[in-house]
Image (cartoon, rainbow, N blue to C red; front, top):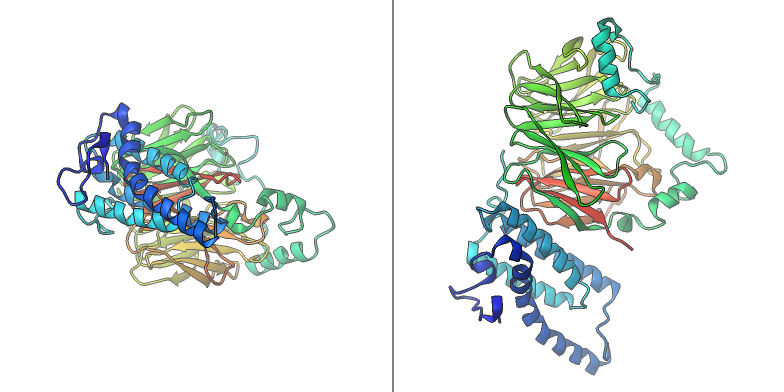
Length: 557
């Protein structure tokens, strides 16, 4: 078989080229990748393809044609995803002094693999190529275990959040109910579930409720199956500005298709824009003196709050990147997570390493009286319900606490405690009032380092949780996060997405009893720590422990 520029490649020798030799200069990357990464496969498959075409023609199965069934096409796509995943896992070892090349390499590999997937090669040949490819990489770099590849460091009103902050600066007495945009029902969660069912069962003709017969719902779902709705595969873009430092969190801006942000253990945050093309880093937020652990967008997207191991909460202006305010933890402890109060973005809840929760008024930089409580361990995750009445908090001892939030005063009252698994960190909590027309109960999605993604039902107005079902993923130590799909309430069926320590992104149908995996994305070189959809689900972002952020686009039908 021939390698770079026609030289002979011996599968067991020391004179291997391609991945086995010197990397080219950056401008020659596409030529180098094309010649070296695919030539082995072309040599390997050309003979096999002719043999198989002749055999099929002889048997009368496919005379004179390279046509493959839809099922075969799906199999081929899956194999090419596995090839890309193998390359991504070894990518950290390529050109260690030239990290930009690694990003360009994996992006070009993705493009070439997608193009060659359309050529009609048999899935069996692709699987043989995958085996050969893995052997060649192992010869060059040595066997790669799962752990060695990880490389991880362990409002919508017309008034913006900044407007409200200025009001508080001018009049500190306005702290009461200022900023509350609508009243909140006092009904229980049992009543909420009953109301959800009533909306579905007693809908008036022509109403736009989440049912399979509603025209608007069918239009948003694309009139396709759940698997087709979440057929993400192609890479739209790769960001690598935080290369070699883990990106623990990322999130698209609220109601936005093209604006997203991420934080990094290198101590900075990035605000990125995908439109107009080409995608670019709009702002880099610098100021934290330690790794950034979490952040949150305000509902109007004009402010970001972030927490860091340096013990500070920072408030950023997203237009110019200025740090508006710095709030230091009075206990000088590491700050690990934060979230906005959904009904009043002047209030932010922060969790620290000394087991404490605290409500902070970002307009004044002061703690809210009565807005503090203590958990059994380091506070790792936070989530409000949609009305902002219940706050759930998870710690590193395996417990989830629910708190009742007083909208008028900001006071927290501890309500319930659930021990998910003693000693297992609760890394991620996401709340949803209802997730589909089949699942109309308020729900909580939890990552808990037990090698499972957990879905709970909220059964009362104190936040009591009841396990509904679980999904197997690889998750034992990293801070992996998951999300509900934003448009699932408008579809028949429901989907959740999660990262995993096996470097994959998983889509699960919460209503499917068997074979719940809807899609699986491969391409990261380390544990996938966070995932985020844009508002119309046309793009999905995922971030990993090596600092890579991949923007996936929905397959075009």
